[in-house]
Amino acid sequence: MDKSAAAADDVERGDYEQEHERTGTVWTATAHIVTAVIGSGVLALAWSVAQLGWVAGPLALAGFACVTYYTSTLLANAYRAPHPVTGDRNRTYMDAVRSGPREVFMCGIAQYVNLWGTMVGYTITATISMVAIRQSDCSRRNGAGARCDASGTVLMLAFSVVQVVLSQFPGLEHITWLSVVAAVMSFAYSFIGLGLSVGQLVSHGGGLGGRIAGATAASSTKKLWNVLLALGNIAFAYTFAEVLIEIQDTLKSPPAENKTMKKASMYGIGATTIFYISVGCAGYAAFGSNAPGNILTAAGLGPFWLVDIANMCLILHLIGAYQVYAQPIFASVERWAASRWPEAKFINSAYTVSIPLMQRGSVTVAPYKLVLRTVIVVATTVVAMMIPFFNAVLGLLGAFSFWPLTVYFPVSMHIAQCKITKGRKKWYLLQGLSMVCLMISVAVGIGSVTDIVDSLKVSSNPFKTVS
Image 1 (cartoon, rainbow, N blue to C red):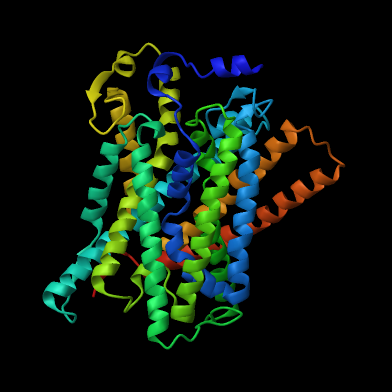
Image 2 (image 1 turned 180 degrees about the horizontal axis):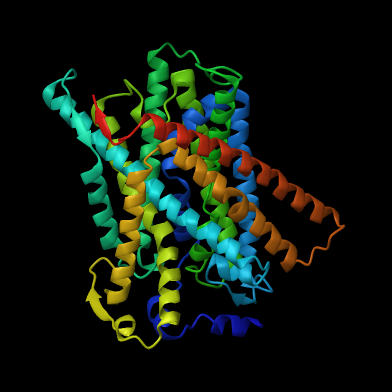
């Protein structure tokens, strides 16, 4: 396909032409990436570094960042195929896989389970932060020694209602403003968490806590599970490959979308890596082996009001980040429904609604989309209520998504696109990278499942907290 044909492909047909206008730049893409990457995973980094120690912890953070950035550049080239600049567009991750490797079904399972699982994780994290704010408010009003009961069920439902409303926006290109706000909030609570950790460190005389080999455990087996869970948390903290193609599909051209996306990936991952190493190491230095799974829940961490602000910023960030992961699911389900019942009146009916904050001033709302999106959000909330364990869920999501979505498919598509034949040095290097990451993902998955099983044995109502 020549350049004029590729440009003509920007004009879409039907609903897609009406709803999808590519106006994104390197900065809007960076905002989407930061919103997707800097999420609840940052709060577990102090605990993760504590399990790995002063040497392995920072090395793991830097190592996962390098792998994520490299494979994201490979994936950015797969947005168009067969040529990365003039080829046909692949508007979703599955479309990109379909034009390269043929394991489309496996890709779909991995991508959409991880997208949905991340929505579950964000629902859990937002609820934990809302419960923390309520407890803090109760302690201020009734005294530090007062009994404060806080159930997160109602708060989780409130978060889900907000998501039902935001889910009615047609796609990511209509909620760039939400991603920008969410990205700002992510930097805000990361800075606050970093500052509070440094303050805690200074208040104890500035001596570094922790050990070279990391925190000890009751047994060598428990130590192994903790190390694997820490690696899973770090892997999850860098995950965004499953939405990279969808983000790239919002970019205008020229310049070529893959070049813009590579720059955005470098800026986004570079910024988050600096934050991650700073937050993880500062938290470990401040709390040592006692670093909590969620740094904002650490006992005696800073003034109540500042911790509350951090939790509020986290909630606002997760509201936007939830949509970054939810919109690809909505689009996929809606395409399936439209192809399954193309003549159905319920599916083809639509209404125009005015929205003041939008550049275009209005959006098209279809009743069947309202129903489908609401059902998905409700199902996500129900699952979050069933398995509300922060660290274990993050670790499992990291294990499940890191190898197939971040490494295997980008590497396989790059080999197919560049026609790298078996026997060449680069082929062996790429396959070696894939195999190492596969072994890490399998080990982390085993550790995360073990932790979830242990947590279910000792906690029947994790959101019912008392202080």
